[in-house]
Length: 215
Image 1 (cartoon, helix red, strand yellow):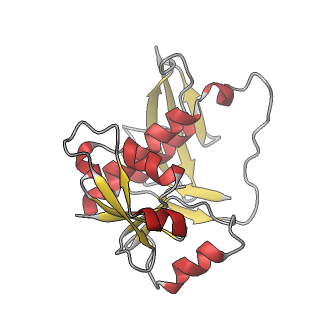
Image 2: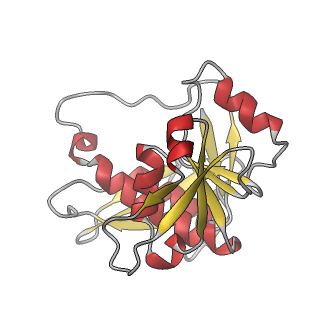
């Protein structure tokens, strides 16, 4: 379980109630005021309507706003909150594509501006999807894909066929040991029997500085 640690806002901006987290509905907005841990609090509002007829991932947006304001995250090895599953839960109206769009936007807003160039670790479906989802400016920062799949490496490059540029971008595909950090990693953890984790550790990189997980 991960717990958000929020920073104190001026009292005029946030008035948390005794239960620590409130939802209010002034007009078409949902407002949340949260007090976590040592009385630190944050205030956040999102539009209550639907995005393109689908639900809004309010918890994700609240978490991102918390990070934008300088908040941190600490790990607690116990369950602090349980969600009740039922067929009419609002979570079913939130599309995976909507969550993906918010994640890519946050990556471009908070992480990629720190890097002049980067490598996408995964020349497969998820890595290519991330590349196609980036803005043109961020795409130009991608110097390579890297992978361990010999077939992908042997091909030598990924061509972005949907690009309007001429000639169309051709991004090199390298073995991970030949690629240069920083990396945006699009490989899920715990799916390769530890092989991916061993490969990553062998490079002696620092998370947050030399690589980020996006999977």
